[in-house]
Structures are given as C-alpha cells and as structure tokens.
Length: 247
Image (cartoon, rainbow, N blue to C red):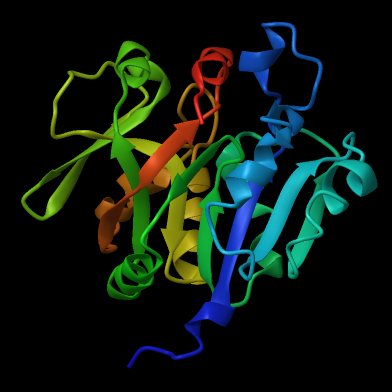
C-alpha cells in the first residue's frame, strides 16, 4: 500500500565537488555550479527541476564561500543540509557516498547533477519509483550528444532489459536515449549496496567512479530498473552547451 505521506520522504542530493575541468580549460574562474544562466547560478536553476518542498543535500568543496554562495542562494529551500569536503573525491559516486550517514532508511533518494534542468510528470515519477528499485532519467539525444557520444552514457530498452553504453564508442540509434545525470533510488539500502559493489570491484570510467555505473551494476545484481523520460531538458555541462543554451 502506497504511503500517503510519501512526499515527506524525498531527498535530493546534488554533488558539486568536481573540478569543472571542461570550463577551466576555457578560462572560467568561477566555481562551476555558480556560473550564471540568465543571471541565476547554474545549480539553483538545476534544483528547480524538483519541488522546493523536497529535502536537499548539497555537497561541495571547502574552498567555496558557504554563507555567500550556497546558504543565501538556497534560502527558498526549507529543508537542506550542506556538506563541505576538504579534499577531492574519486568521482561523483564517491562524493554521493559521503551523504549516506545523513539519509533515513526509507527516504526515496534522488541524485541530481548541478548542470542540467528539465520538467517531469511528478505523479508518474512517484508511481514509477514505488514500482521499481531505481530509475534513470533519460532524454532524446541532441546533435551535441551524438557528436560527443563518448562523453555520455546511453540506454536502450530491449524487451525487459536495458542495454547500457557507458561513455564509450556508441552507434547512433534512434531508439537509444542519453542518461542525463539524474538517478532515483527507492531507498538508502539500494543505493548503498550499488555504491559499495562499485568501490569493492573498482569499477571506474575514465579513472573515476560515476553514478552511471550503478545502472549497469543494478541489472547484474537483480534490481528492478526503469527509466523516466523528461521534457524540456537543458544541459550546461560544457562550454559549448552553455553557449548554445536557449531559454
């Protein structure tokens, strides 16, 4: 029976502890999540993909000005926590792992990148996450995605299973969708199991631990996986995407 109070059990995690190298090589000095999109910091626009009533955990490096750059900008979010790391992690998945001790056992967990936004059918999302162990958020690939296919992960559903391509050579296929960088887990245990399996077996992509890997592992471990297609998807993950962005 679905919990009528399930809304209270959603928590979004936004890992922002990366180096932002795609931007640094183009001369950007600003901390990537604080790069403005129409005068609004990137990570704030990204957070608005979900209801402001959801709880949030923001994870960044200590060098950021917490009071000025994060607390002030997120005042519209009622429930939030800030984790500041004193050193670089081994990738996005390693960063997310730092949040485990702050999560409740029965919370639905959403991991959401700081460099993208979209619209979803919230009712459909809630229904799907109750029926599955984890969801991967997807979108139709753009010309930029196909041109730079090695920088992205892709998914294609074949019967009741998913074929996953993790940041490697990819054959353009109209039935394949790009993994946009947002994932949902039914509960803490599922995410913890997948993360620890990844670390134990040292499963890396380009020498880093990515959340994308958990989708591949989930099927191997017998978890029930599904995808959620989003609408009005915008990505600012690179200098080129930022320049080409249109409202």
